Length: 138
Image 1 (spheres, helix red, strand yellow):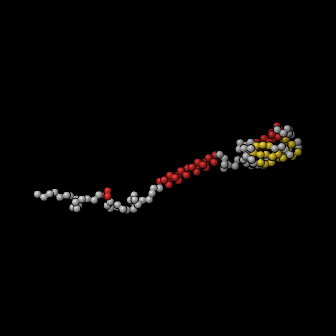
Image 2 (tube, one colour):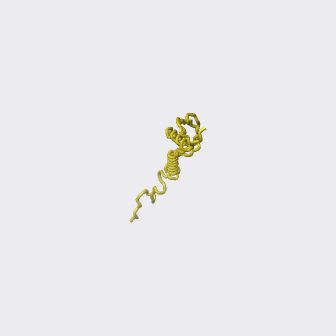
Image 3 (cartoon, helix red, strand yellow):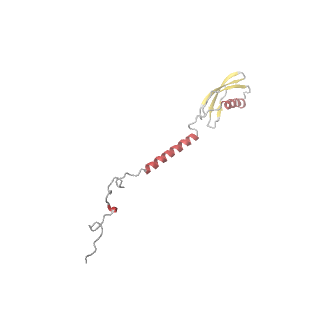
């Protein structure tokens, strides 16, 4: 009797794709692929989000807005300060330049009629509230 013959290729074994074979060294193999782009994409997204958050914070804090004083309120405030703080009772025709920005330290002059005589008062912005200081008329 003859011993049973192995089935397969006839060479006593078979090739497994686990150890190579066709396509083992093609361009898509893990050894040949470049490093993952995922960390770069995540980093870029984080940078964009942080930049947007910083821009939004700056916008809401008023850095990009040129807020200006309300003319009517300014005129009334100057007249009130001149009457209450300086004792000038005949105050009229307060005129200040338009579009004065609200920025601490900013100064400008207003003209005002006191007892029929034209005077100048210096206005200085104290903070972003806006609070301002009215100088003595001269």
